[in-house]
Length: 61
Image 1: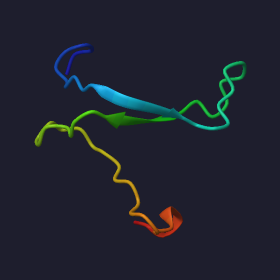
Image 2: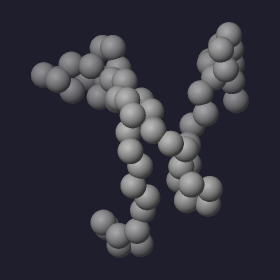
Image 3: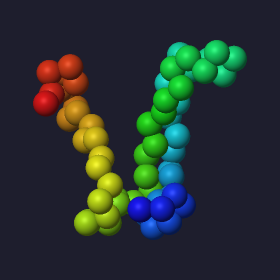
């Protein structure tokens, strides 16, 4: 695969940055991107499922 070739474009509905993100130090530089629509099947993109309501994410998996 060549850089900037192929891929899937997806509209982002919401960006949820980490609550402790610090732009001065770039600590906690991560965010959850909520997509406007589900990714197409067979797109080759791996996703991380969210824990169900009431589940303890530390015990999932």
